[in-house]
Picture 1: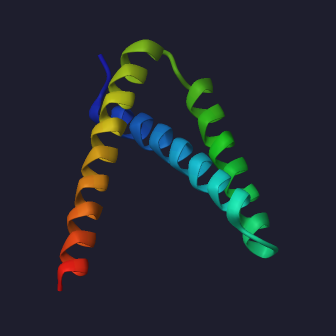
Picture 2 (picture 1 turned 90 degrees about the horizontal axis):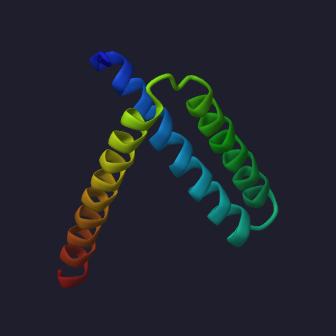
Length: 92
């Protein structure tokens, strides 16, 4: 059985790695100059975090599936919150 602190660490590392990789790739693609360099560094940090996540896994499948489901739920919540925020700003 996985303890709460371990699970929190696994979920944090996975979600940080995925989002840093995605945001870094987007910044590297659409940025220019220093922004592009920062995007590449951010993407590399995301890859390192994902590599660390894979390296420390003992209960790989159970934690991985839970982390993916939790990450998708968090992403849906963030997108809904952002959508509501943007709609409220645009209407006023």
